[in-house]
Length: 150
Image 1 (cartoon, rainbow, N blue to C red):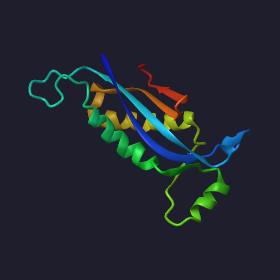
Image 2 (image 1 turned 120 degrees about the horizontal axis):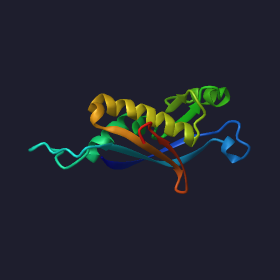
Image 3 (image 1 turned 30 degrees about the vertical axis):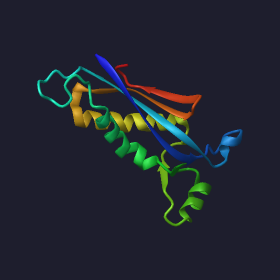
Image 4 (image 1 turned 90 degrees about the vertical axis):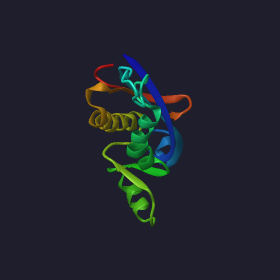
C-alpha cells in the first residue's frame, strides 16, 4: 500500500467563545489542510493514472469543492455562539459557515476528515482510503485525524 498527500491552503476567521485567552476574540488564520490517501498503484495499461495511487489534481478537486471553497474567506462560527452569529447575520452578503461545534483545529480537522472520507469512498470505493488529515492553524500548531485503518 502506498500513501499520497496533498496540501491545500485557505484563509478563515473564527473564535473560541469560552477560551481563557486571546482566542476568545474574533481572529483569522492561514490554514493548511493536508490530506493523505492510501491505495494500490494503478497498473492499468493506458490509464491516465497508471503508476499512481490517485492523481494529485483529483485529490485537490474533491477537497477544494467540499472544504476549501466552502471555508475559504469565511467566518467559521459555532451555532451556539449566538452573539457572533447575530452580528455576522447583520452583515449583508457575509460569508459565514455555521458549525455544530466550536471551530477549534481539532473539530475542524474532524469535520474535514469525515466529509472527505465519505466523498473519496463514494468516488473511488474501497480502492482508495482517506487515512489521515492534518490541519495547520499556524505553521507550528496543528491537529491530526486518523481513519480507523491507520
